[in-house]
Image (cartoon, rainbow, N blue to C red):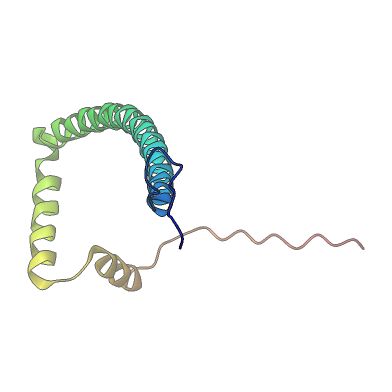
Length: 128
């Protein structure tokens, strides 16, 4: 006859897989936290850089708008009224007809080619 004797102060528990699993899960969570922190830092740097680029783009836009306002003032002068009216008329006609400016200009060039002076330069060879 065998008498069971238990010398342990607490009974044996089978929780080793649970401890290993929770340790592994904690390691994964720490790695995820480190990754999220690094992504947040990168995002903050990108945000600051984007804000700087936005300021530069806004400055450039203001300069372009100022230049455009100067050009518009020049076009609105009485001596340029005929040119402006003709441009508006051409734009409206092209818009109605659905013809692009490129097509219009190419067709007008075919009708009257550019008068360029032609200078003939003989090729310079080694043996002259």
